Image 1 (cartoon, rainbow, N blue to C red):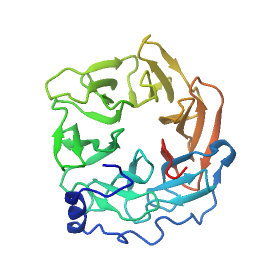
Image 2: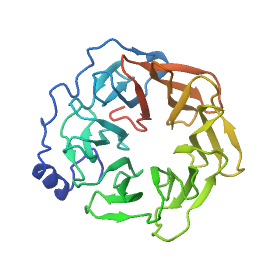
Image 3: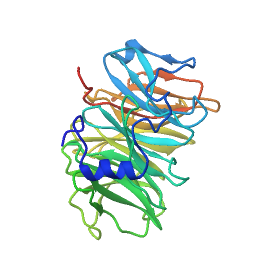
Image 4: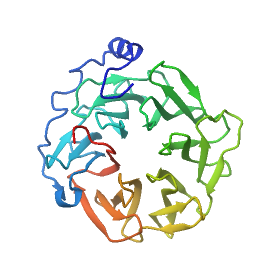
Length: 316
């Protein structure tokens, strides 16, 4: 099932039952923003990126399109929308939202803000959804006493629990080949980075790949699957680091510019987008994956964070 095509019948039917039909969002969804902002279009080039921002008062998802030099809304409602992830072909955006009564559920919407569909509906908290590389599955975290990882098959609607342990598991990220997941967890109190096979069944031991810091979080595979970027707290600040899976080397990418978080590798693996927060602002930045200079990419009147590149933009 390509995500640029039709959705499975079960998913469309669920969307109708839950009231998430095209037009259910504000008419501003998909429209260009009407607030002052800065985007370094030359730096963005012919690439596309999504991120979340509080520029309109609530947390919404935004889309910076380097092909059209335009910043647009993906969501525009009075709810908190976060943890966005684009489909592999760039046609849709997966995210977590409080739109269904306060607790967070999973939704998917067109990159142009059209056709929102609710994927989960329960009294639990569902966060951090990510598409598999083939677009057929999503993995997310769900609060069931502890946050555990779950997989939703978009063809069948089947949900499978991947972890079942007495500690929290957060922010999964797929390897490029779809066979592994990186995430962070705290079985010993500190937060470390782990990797499991996607065939993982509860009870099997994951591989701990980063245990150097008290807090190592939000891992992101590079396009080769050989390196993992992550954020870590050290010496009073959050900074970005990379882990080389072959050598075991950990390299610092940023230092001392503020709280640098939410790393996401560019489609060619040469750069990392991230959020940089100070006392009064938070913006989207880009740095070389080797730690070369960091440059401001996007700034709005709100706090901007959680950037994610669109790996294969549609129609280009």
